[in-house]
Image (cartoon, rainbow, N blue to C red; front, side, top):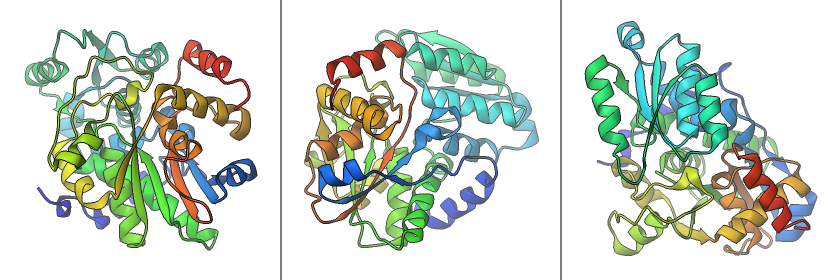
Length: 330
C-alpha cells in the first residue's frame, strides 16, 4: 500500500462530514510553556473533543459513509477505550447499534462511558484472548460492519481533520510551525496529521512520541520494517498499547514522519501534572506523551515554533491523583 490510499482530498471531505458534528478544538499557547521551552509552543487539546479524545473524528467519518442497511445491522469494534467511545457516540448519533470488545482491565472511566453512550460492551482477557477473533465472530453472526481502530483509510482521513484544523489555526496566528509532535499508538492519528500537515506545509517536521515500553514504531524505523513487540508490560498509557504499527498507517508514517521519540512513565506523569497545574487541562497518559517529550527536551526547539496534539483526557481518578502527588510542583 502507498500513502495515495489516503489523500489530502479525503481529509478535506472528512472535514465537511464533521462540520457542525465534531468540536473544532482550540489551538492554545501558554507563556509558561513558551518560557520553559524557549520557543513558541501551540497545543491542540483533543481532550475537549466529544468523548474526550480525537477518536470521535475517525469513527464518525467511517460510520457516516455506511449505507442505511449497514447502519441498521450495526457496527462492531475493539478498543481499550477511546475508539470504543468514539464508535459508540458516532453510532448513537446515526441511530446505529454498536458492540464494542474491550479488555477487562480497561480504565473504568472508558468502560462506563462506552456503556453510557449506548453500546453493548463485551469484555475479554487481553492476555489470553484475541479481541480480533471475538470481534470477527460477532460481525459474522450479526452482519455488523467491523470498524478498525486505526488501519482504515476512512478512520485515518477523519483523524487527519485534527491536523487540518491545527494548520488552519496556525495560519490564523500568521505562523508556520517548524515541528509538529503527536502521540502514536496504532498510527491513525499520526498518519492523518502527517498527511494534512505536509500537504499544507511541506517543510514542517513531524515527530511521533511513544512510551518507552511500547516502542514498536521506534523499533520499526530502526529495522526498516514493521516490528512486533511484547505487549504484556504495564503502562499508564493504555491508549498507546498497540504492539505493532498498522500496515496502512505504517505505509504512510514510514514515509512522512521525520523521527520517533520515547518517554518514560515518570515523564508522562510529570506532563499530566504540568498540564493540570500550568495549562489547566486534564490529560490522560497516552494523550500527554508529546507534551512529555517537549518538557524533557527530547527535541531541540529553542527559538522555533512548535505545535503538538494533546490527544485525550480520559483518565481514571486514581491515576490522575497519583500523577499529581508524584509531581506536585511541575
